[in-house]
Image (cartoon, rainbow, N blue to C red; front, side, top):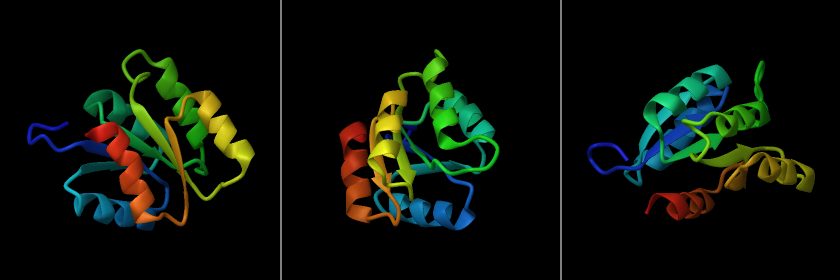
Length: 125
């Protein structure tokens, strides 16, 4: 949480429009939102800011969400951060792989605001 007692959410997505949409949804519920467009940027922000929850896209260039999640879990400073995968991939295989790598939740795109809020409530209240 930040100094104003707002939960901090890190959104990682390589598509700027997706970040804008998620930010608007989260700010309307009084979350502080920080964002990253690359895995490298997200890893640095996660370590520095220690967000309450990370919303992590899977399909990204260079470093995909699975690799970001694996790196978060292998870093002593970020291994316990809550991570919710947010992806257009909706197969049982994708969900299972995410859970095995240490994801705390999984949401599919297109995003349903109510489901997003329900998932975040589990980790921020």
